[in-house]
Image 1 (cartoon, helix red, strand yellow):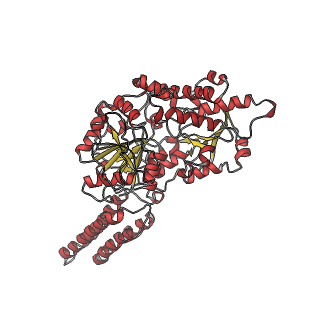
Image 2: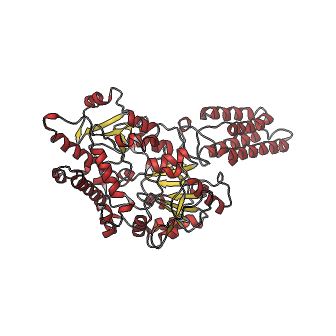
Image 3: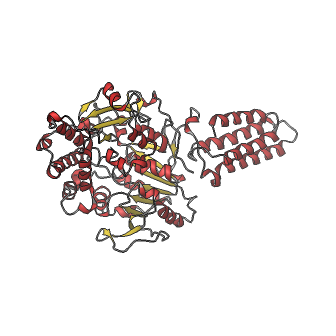
Amino acid sequence: MQVGVWRVSVCQLAAKARATTTTTAISAIATATKFQAKKVYKQSQTDVLCKLRKGCQGFAKLALNSTREGGNNQLCGERIQTAAIRATQLITKRSFVSYSRYSASTIMNSYCKELTLMTYDIIGFDLDGTLLRYDLQHMTTLIYNSLKQYLVEHKGYPEALLQQKLDMDFLQKGLILDGTRGNVLKLSHEATILRASHGTRLLSDAEIVAIYGPERRWDVSTAFYKDPLSTWNGPSSLQMRALLDFFDMPSSLVFAQAVDIVDRNSGSSGAPKEYKVWEDLLDGLMLNYSRDNFSNDKSLYFKAMRADPQRYVLRSSDKLISWLQELRANGKKLFLLTGSNIDFANLTATQALGRDWQQLFDFVVTFAKKPGFFTMKRPFLVVDNEAKHELPGSELNLETDLKSGEIYSQGNWHQLHLSMAKLLNKDTVEARALYFGDNIIQDIYTPVKHRDFDAVAIAEELSLVDQKDYQFNSVMSSNFWDSYFFIGDTPTLWSGFIANYAQICVSSMDQMAQMPPTERIVSTNVNGFYPAMPQQLMSSNLTTSWHGGGV
């Protein structure tokens, strides 16, 4: 339903209130019933529905005031109050708002996204990049060097690659690799190519148009923009890669420098028609992060992390830990959902959250295989908490209730949601869920688009906006690519996803922990950036058709 229609309806009803109290009362119920019957984009109970409740109550109160001089004031007043209560109940009733949808692009100028944690029953958290933060200087250096070494030692690249320097200015989360052409791309919120490089060389606008056409589009990245999961696996995954997190971010420079070396060594034959660098690099990423290599020293990344975790993992604040405990004290069911295997998750969580980190959550799920965790029905396996591995033969039936306090591996959202809802003595449609995560596709887009979640995006890049003394400024800021959120006055792909799918977006969980869990958090903008929107986005054409806010 268009907000313009609602605004007209309220104004009309308020105007009619002075003419006839009976019409007002009936119209109030009719307006609420109209919202009940029509599906629009989901919006949170704490924003649009709040406006509707206030609207119904407001015009009913106006009607009441307008009839106080009449002869049957008490009867009319009672009828109007009853109508207003009935209208409010209809708007608030979960049986229809659970499936309501609301287009934020039609919301009044006064609208801002907001978050009230107390309206949720279940609250989940990603681990890496969310509840724990990394020392980005040291971790980026480690990943960059380990990937270069892999290409030289396992794929036969010239040792000249090892001599290349780590250029932090070339790095940025969210870049897209065009593996076949050897290009690195930065996309707009509408999937046009804003900026691109071949290897480490910046391409001119004319070169971008010559390669990708006058519309500056690549069909594979456009398919990703329309449906990110369609390119997650299969042939498209060998052509492109979206560098979605800090584990992926150093890949852009290794990829680009390897392309440069391939070009230099091509000789008279010229640059190859199709580059194989991305396929080789993908093998390196798989070796680096495969759970099978956590303890066998094949992964230089895991080897370094095991030897000196405090060098790479930052200690989470005591305030954040207290904030989590306060959520549970307020009756919320908390779960940790991470793609890391239990051994690596235990290493990093112990460093960040302390030895008793498991006690902060009702459920812990490791090796979750997101985004498939939200879209598929993989079985859970039980984790041996002492040995830190999956128990052989422990695969659970999809109908089995999960036990609070246990650690599980793999699994699916449907079963976890049902188990937590039962602990709350609620149906799943009543047990509202919220998830915090930093991976925009795995943690924000997928649960909101494909399941009944709301989500809060963690974008550490906002620290460049709201913290003058941000410690990783040299890693996160880029003159080569400009801001993670925009180029000029054009929003990036990730600004678009955040605006469309995140309830709000904050720089870190520590920022959340600065406020009591009971406090209502209101952003200053329709796109949900908190505490403020990056200034350049304020004058951009970033719009939102809000898909979140299930109530």
